[in-house]
Image (tube, rainbow, N blue to C red):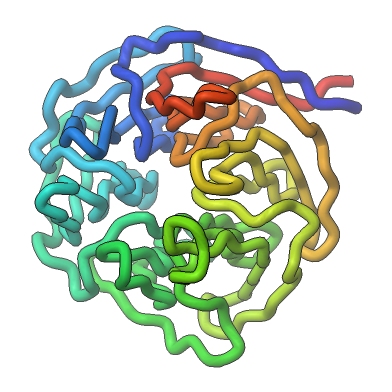
Length: 313
């Protein structure tokens, strides 16, 4: 058995972007919002869907939720969900509104002002039939380590987390695999480091979101911000992210327990990227969009390509 990589599209019809939401819903892949450039204020609130990742249909050019990126997106309880995120950089405007849709076209504002601080660069996943939102930041200096969950998207509880648990962080990732909730990687504020942040290489897990254990610190992969983290075939898969300021990776790792990691590929064929979209769909891992920097100039640009990896004999 091995892993095969395929490029499904080198240029999807949706505009290049990062911080996009990608989910699987009603037998289709969905792309929701994102930004072409956070610096110049080009955010999106469009909605796209595809049954094969190659041919895309624009469901909405402008959804009723405001343009945003780094928002949480879920397929949960028979609906699509868009939660929070970042609306603009100048001035900085974080969001904590909650929207749902039964079909991707008709949207309802479920909660205009959720009972937690508006934020972005957080992590989210579904675990034990609850939506989880974890950590994040409101700006460069205010980060969180809280764990929030909901069984209906309207009522939220702050999990009674107790030490030991992970430090405050942003640009981390979360996933549910084999009955455990995982939080990995990210950035912690550290003024002694370039750009004021230290890249993390730890792995934490919990059965219930309250009692946590550290499975690896350091992990065998390098510290990173905004990697892909997915549960696929009873394994946790990690790829890419920002490995150091303005240097993006595309390595691929997996683990069955969060402790022992194996490198599957040093350099998959997709370009290194961060803050991209990812999903498991039709028994394949899908990677799309994100932010890339050319080497050695490290000139950054947004992507709208679509890639898969799958198990082959």
